[in-house]
Length: 235
Image 1 (cartoon, rainbow, N blue to C red):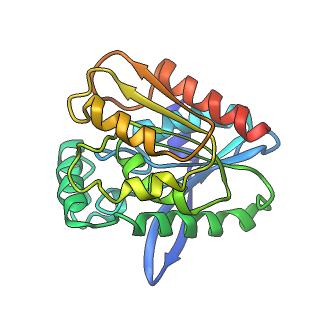
Image 2 (tube, rainbow, N blue to C red):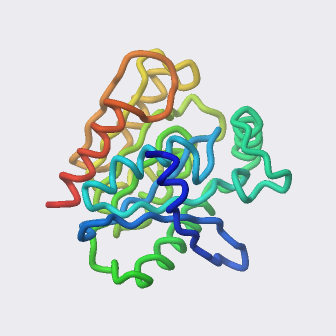
C-alpha cells in the first residue's frame, strides 16, 4: 500500500512570500468528503512512512490528504538527505533557533489555498493531523486558521525548549482536538504535556494516552486519530 501511495502522490507547486514550498497531495477514488492537512514528525518528510500511513487511512474514507516538508526536511534540504537521525538533529537545531516556529503555519495555509481551488474542494471541511514536530508547528496554525474543523495532535509538551510561545496559540484553538501522548515518552514529560493540553481553548478536547515511548502514529493510535477526524468533519 505505501509503495502504491508513493507512486501516486501528486506534487503541488506552492509559493509563500517568495519561498518555494515542497508539497504533495492525494485524492480519494470516491467522492471527496473532506481534506486532511498532515505534518510529519521531526525525523520525517512529506513522503515518509508516517505520512503514507496517514494517507492510507484517510483515502478510503473519502478524505484527501495534503502534506508539506518541514523547514529543514525532505526537498528543502540542500544535501538531499532523508536519514531520520540527520533530520531530527537538524529539526532540533532549527526549532531552538526559531526557524519555522510560526512561518510553517503561513506556509501550510498557503498550501491549502493552492490546493483547494485546484480541484473544487473549497467548500469541504478541513482537518489537521500532526504529532511531535507536527504539533509544535501545528499549534500556531490551529490558533490562527479557523477553517480547520478538527485536529489530531500530541506528543509535545511545555518542557521542550523554546515552546513558550505555544501557550498563547493553544488558548486560541477552538476546534475539536484529539491530543495524544505516550505514557513513557522520553522526550516530552507528563507535566509538560498536561500543561500544553490544558492550555488548549477548545471545549471539545480529549487527552488520549497510550503505553510506551515516543513514536509516530501507527496502528491503533493512527486509526483512533483518523476516526476522530472523520467523525468531526462529518458533523
